[in-house]
Image (cartoon, rainbow, N blue to C red; front, side, top):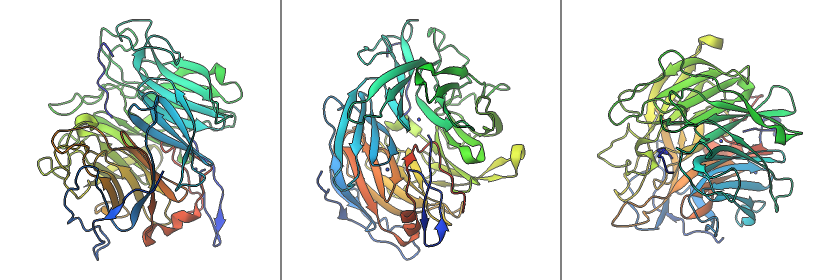
Length: 484
């Protein structure tokens, strides 16, 4: 979600599986809902979208995607839900008031292991081993979990990264805070090329002259180095300028100028990262983890309003960028906005080494109109580890969850969907799925208002994903599939 900064105010993978003679690289993972079937599959393999807009809280879906569980939010973690991370039999869910650890050993009956109250939007989240990382992107009175909201004009206000020890999942322990310029809207966990260290690429934006800790220009990211055997030594080690020549896109009416990045996705095995940076999409060489280098930059001055996030395909030859038109709080999945705004953009990556470039191929947007009372736009999703195809699952806020195939970059097609009807029949009310990710046979969604959802996808096109078992998954740190 776009955050507009005012004076007041995201991953590592491990792999192991052998099945049917294939060695596949991998990463480690309420009562059933009334997932009524509303549509069928068209002969072409795309989803028939003749369904009407569902009623308030009514659930509709394609036959191949059904809800199997839901856990509502619980106080004091009853603020807005945000991102997700996974490790073994646990899911870790961010919330503007802290984070929740779920036991998902039985996906159809998840349970709460612990809740940690530690306010600080957005609480973007990642995990590695015994450590959990949270992003704080609102000015706080101090770096503690007892802090209060304050003003970004106050030099003593704090924003940045918080580090927790989660060796005991029932009793996480706060161990370190690292302040970063302009806070931490999101962060991306990037493993070092040698064992013992991870890096966090911290994305933030919206500087203002009156903010002492967020001064313009802000064309950089913060890189936090975390020694795994001594996380209390975590510190900012670099703040590389990603737009040294032109400062990034200057903006236009209805589209953001570049003043930092919103999110970065890393593909460590290929030493690549893709940055969604407000007005620009960038491809980076991260061979030197402390000095990422931009090798190509793209802009869409016709349809994109806010470059929000990125996802590589399995082979690292494509990247999908999302456009969060309206900041996640507007009704943009309607006839008036159309199919090319608030959508995904699929780019092929051509060339080799430092000469790689991104070439636009197509847009993808859910092929259903939503009500004008529903906030809906492209948001967080993950690749489904399917052999030989490029398929991802994605959250669209109140547009629900879409599974789509972009194997043919120029002709992406939806193959499954699931959604709830609007929260209100007469006024725009923010909600819906913030993040929808595939993990060890199920799709997990953190709904901003309705809580933690679990869905099961049953489709012949994705059966090979069932061979993959992750040990740990932070979606913005994409796993590698070395044998593919």
